[in-house]
Length: 87
Image 1 (cartoon, rainbow, N blue to C red):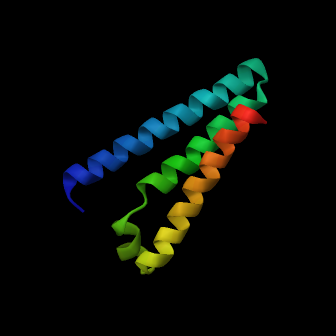
Image 2 (cartoon, helix red, strand yellow):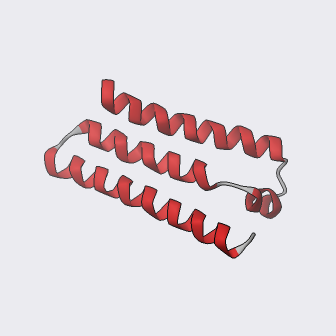
Image 3 (cartoon, rainbow, N blue to C red):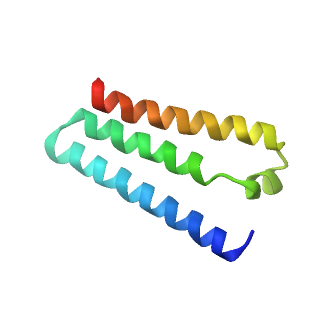
């Protein structure tokens, strides 16, 4: 993996985890259940968003299987965020 791509993915993961942490802090501070769902949703979005070719190479999974897992993680994350808005 190229260094710039790796740094970009690392930055994306860090930003997503920071948003998740702030959501969890908001949940603890205000006992706001929607903030908990925002935090959990961003964890799933962050992990699903940065998965890439390195997982295929490291674990030996097929690109199709990686795509399915990545899509499911992002969909679950969006579901949590959507639930926090409407639930």
